[in-house]
Length: 466
Ligand code: NAD
Image (cartoon, rainbow, N blue to C red):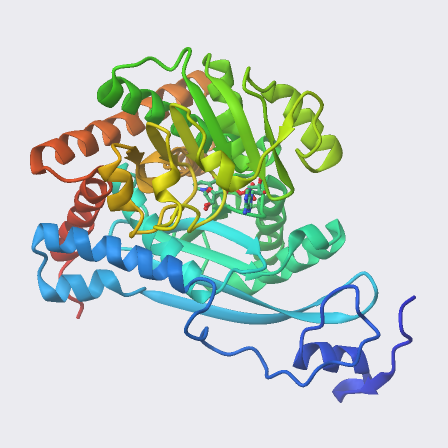
C-alpha cells in the first residue's frame, strides 16, 4: 500500500509532497516507501575514493600510460589525452509508480573530440558512477581511432537499477535524462547509443524527446535506434558480429584453427553476449556454457543457443533451462575451451582468477573485463587476448554507418553494411596483430599505441586554441 502523501505548498500555488522532499534529500530504495528516510548526505559531486568505477578508471589510465610510454608521447599531449575534456553531472527527479518522486544521478563525459563528434553509449546500472563513465569514455576515444571512424569518445549513464523499474518509470527517467543531456547531445556534437541496461527502445525515447523539443525529427541524435525510426540494418547484432570476426581472425592468425568445430564459453547474455553466442553457434562453434546475472548454463555437448534466447525472453533468466547443468562465472572462466568471451561488465578476470583461464583465446566483448594485473598472467599462460577496443568495436562501426545514413536519408542494405563492417574491423585487427609482432608487444598495448598515436596526431595538427 502506498503511504498517503502530504502536500507541501510551493511557489505559484503548486504543491510538492512530503515524500518528494524526503526522496530528494536521501533517495529511498524502491519497495520501502513507508520507511523513514535515513539522514544521508545529498549525492556528492565527485565519487569518493574506492568508488565502484575507480578500478575501471585506474585500468584505463594504466593502459593509456603504457601506450604513451611506448610512443614516447610529449608531456603536454599526454596530459591532454589523459584528462576528460568535458563532464556533466545531473540530478533529476522522476515520479515512481507508487507516487513518490526519486532523485537520480546521471553523467555524460566527453573524453576527447579531436577526431570528430563525441560518440558513446549510455548505461543504466546500479554501480554506474563518474569514474566508470570517465573510463568508458576514454576507451571510446581509442576504439573510434583504432577502427578509423571519425568520432571522439564519450560515455554516459544513470545510477539506477532498470531491472527493478517498470517500463513507465524507465521511460520517464530516460526522457528526463535526455532533456538534461540536451546541452551536449546532437548529430554534430555528441551521439549516444545503447550500452548495459539500455536498448533500442531507450534510444527511441531519447530521439523522440529531442525531436519534440526541436520541433522536427532528429534521427541522427542517437544510434542503435529501431529500424522503423531511422535505425540501421545490422546494428542490433553489430557488436556481436564484430566479436565473431575478430575471434575468427585471431584463431586463424595465432592458432591456425578455423571457427567451425571450435568450442566456446560466454559470460553475459545481453546485447553483446547473446548475439556473439548465437553467431558463434551459427558459425559451427560448440558453445558449451553461458552465464548471466541470474545464473549460468553448461552442456558439454553444446548448448542450443536459439532455444536459450527464447527461454531468456520468456523467463528473464537462463537458470534452469532444460537439458543444462548450472554453472557460475568462476567455473566458466576455468573451462577448457578454445574461446572465452567476456560480454558482461568490467573487472571480471583479475590477478586472482587469471591463472584459472584455460581458454586459448580470450575475447573482450565487454569494455575493460580484464584488469591490468591479469594481463601478464594471461600472457605467460599463452592466452591470446583480443583487446576490448578492437574486439567490441563492431557496434561503433555500424553506429557510424547509421549516423551517415541518417545524414543522407539514404539507407543501405544488410549486405553492404555487413561487408563494410567486416572490412573495417579486419583492417583494424590486421594493424593490431602486425604492430604487436613488429614491436614485440602484446595486442592490447599495440591497439592502444595505434589509437593513441592517431588521436595525438589529430591533436597536434589542430594545434592549441587560442
Ligand atoms: P546488456 O545490459 O545488454 O547485457 C549485459 C549482460 O551481462 C546481461 O546478460 C547481464 O545479465 C550480464 N551480467 C551482468 N553482470 C554479470 C555477472 N556478474 N555475471 C554474468 N553476467 C552478468 O549490455 P551489453 O550492451 O551487452 O554490454 C555488455 C558489455 O559490452 C559492456 O561492457 C558494454 O560496455 C560492452 N559493449 C556494448 C556494446 C553495445 O553495442 N551494446 C558495444 C560495445 C561494447
